[in-house]
Image 1 (tube, rainbow, N blue to C red):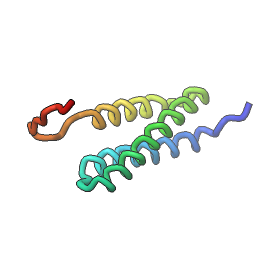
Image 2: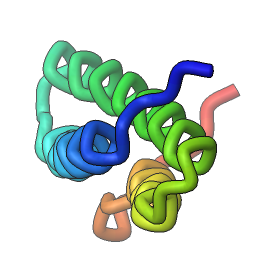
Image 3: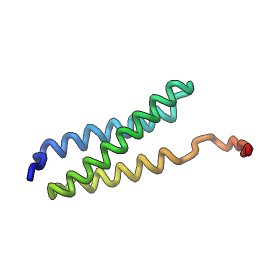
Image 4: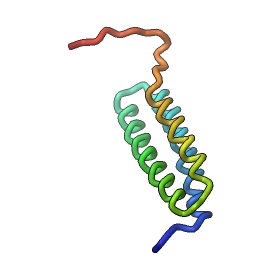
Length: 93
């Protein structure tokens, strides 16, 4: 069975984690709708890539799955956390 080498998994994990965390910051700082849509697409793509890298690192018996799992959790929490500063909006039906 073909598997990736451990250095490839490690470095791709580091790069995707840093890009993912950068995408979170960019997503929160984007003011325009067009920029926000691009940041959302980048974030979802990196989230899927990090999930894939996590699965590959578990399959390759690499210890980098721990940091990948932690980054997945951080990305998910920050993506759903509301940084609105108390601005309440009414729900429209």
